[in-house]
Each structure stands twice: as C-alpha cells, then as structure tokens.
Length: 107
Image (cartoon, rainbow, N blue to C red):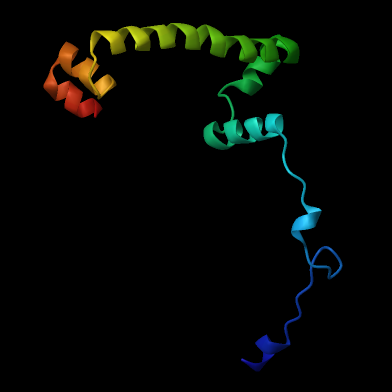
C-alpha cells in the first residue's frame, strides 16, 4: 500500500492545468453535424454510396433526399392529424385502422 502513495501524475500539457478560457465554442454547423452523427452514427451506406457514385453526387443526394422524404411525410402526418383530432398520434391511427390490439402493440 505504501507504493501507491509514490505515484506521480503528469499531464499532456506539461503540467499546466486546463482552464475554461482555453476552450473555444463550437459554431452552429459543426454542432449540427456532431449531433447528427452522435444520434444516428452516420447515414447507413455512406461508404457504398461514395464508392458507387463519387463524393459530389453523394453529398447532393444526402442534401436532397431529406427534403424529398420529409415533405410527403409531413403532409401525411398533417392529414391524419386533421382526420383524428385526438392526442395519441400513431396509436390512435393504427387503433382505428387495424384494431385495438395492434394499437396497443404500437404503443
């Protein structure tokens, strides 16, 4: 137990302590990408897409695809919300379509 008391700690900064003054804030665009990749782990199939069509068309596709996907999805959600003015979202929609068993399973 006496050998543990002789342990000396060192840092990568040459012994200088880190201050909050040394850190810089992340701007909006890098923060957006950090949140996206932190949540989703990156888009599935990026490597195969870059290999197949190249980096330019991959970036164009990743910028256009969410718009093409999101607009119809938001219109469907808006239409279903006006048809069923209740709280519950998908559970209410599935319950009215497929029955209470599947609504419960979805919930």
